[in-house]
Image 1: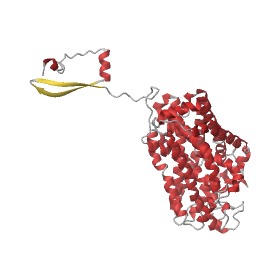
Image 2: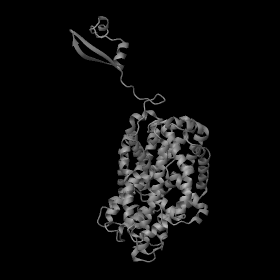
Image 3: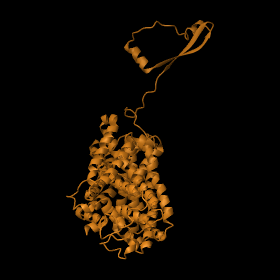
Image 4: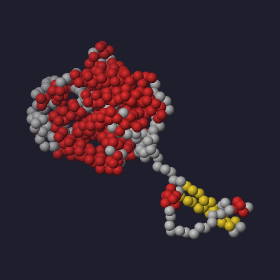
Amino acid sequence: IPAEEMSSVIVPEKPSSNTMGPKEVNVLLFRQVELILVKEQNGVQFTSTTLVTPAAPQTSRSGEEERETWGKKIDFLLSVIGFAVDLANVWRFPYLCYKNGGGAFLVPYLFFMLIAGMPLFYMELALGQYNREGAAGVWKICPIFKGVGFTVILISLYVGFYYNVIISWALFYLFSSFTWELPWVHCNNTWNSPNCSDWADNNTVSDIYTATPAQEYFERGVLHIQDSNGIDDLGRPRWQLTACLAVVIVLLYFCLWKGVKTSGKVVWITATMPYLVLTVLLLRGVTLPGAIDGIKAYLSVDFLRLCDAKVWIEAATQICFSLGVGFGVLIAFSSYNKFSNNCYRDAIITSSINSLTSFFSGFVVFSFLGYMSHKHNVALDKVARDGAGLVFVIYPEAIATLPGSSVWAVIFFIMLLTLGIDSAMGGMESVITGLIDEFKFLHKHRELFTLFIVVSTFLISLFCVTSGGMYVFTLLDHFAAGTSILFGVLIEAIGIAWFYGVDRFSDDIKEMIGHRPGRYWRLCWKFVSPCFLLVSHNIHKQGKTIKKNISHWISIAFPLTMK
């Protein structure tokens, strides 16, 4: 090797030194020196020196450390689907469809889905993904609307106070199902009143002064509402429901304490289990006598009902609440997406699955309602109802008449439990993400902060598991997500479309997915959706007085108690 070339590859030995200046320290901190022995030739050792610069931590567009992301894309999709598909898909939509013209109800429902549901769903996913913040932090794009962010966080927290109680009811029923004979079959229990009467033992099923064993089990055996004289006489928390509520809170904590890395794995069970159970129940339901008549009643088309404004109003209201916009959950979930994720495709897929699930569950519900109508030889409208009365009274009563009823009861209440858990997880994640993104010091203490949130929720929820807790539950249910959520989404849509600007928002989306939203989406965001929300808000606000709403709800759920 020529001497001049050799001098460039031979590394001379340098005397060691115990002192290093600041410059040398920085070099050692940020560079790693690798000395690789090549070979020895002609008595000379050749070495090559490689300077390796370690990868710098990933940073976001704003220069901050990169945000945690979902482990897999499917984790995000299942989380959104699990949140949007909740108990209302089973106990609300099928009854609305039956009551408002059957298949004809799908016309206003799909219409409002296209002009408002999907655009708002898409808007929230894009908003969270681009800004990588929770419901409050995303409003750095227009700080004057930051109050809207805190509003939706408060609403999600508020809903959690009573939504977890519904899950605890399902858990109570689940534990009660592990017996040879279900406790809501007969009237010979300690909680039954003289008014209790089996369907088969009387022909006056429409008599408001009689109650079935399943009805009394829910009202008197589970809730113990007979021990309270009103909201001013709540009594102490029932230890059985308190224990079930505590189990629910513990489950929520361990699903959420590590962030989306843990919750994204839990939804593989909680989001998929309901579909498996619904399919099994449908296969069993269609084999029952009278099931086909129930399904026919569910799908019967009465286009004359479309002339009734109430049908359109109920379709609009169902769209507003079924997709879960306005709770900050979609913003929180999408904020953990990769920046280049196709949020447009996600919005179409998840919102469509939510609506299809609602429609599919109707077949399951009405196959069993048709069976109940046939078994007791009464009109279908005598057994059809929505709300808690459907899943905690009518359905358990139908299951109790089947061979192997305990097994079917366990399957059904596991489905209710999983439907509720992932929706409750979404609401809690909205609160936790929204606050720790706003108050950065909480990032280092997420586990403790999550514990604080779930324990606080548990303590306030104790009011709902007292003997008079149903009165508190009804008040929370009425005020938590009614007019307030519609108003919050309305201001959110106005803030994005008119203050931040549809064009600027469209440029943000192009930066993420490579193309701007079509004119249809921009028109919906700027004009159609805000008008829809404004009309829906006014209708919901002026529909009924508070007193009439509460009395009507309680009289449906507890007709005997009211009488």
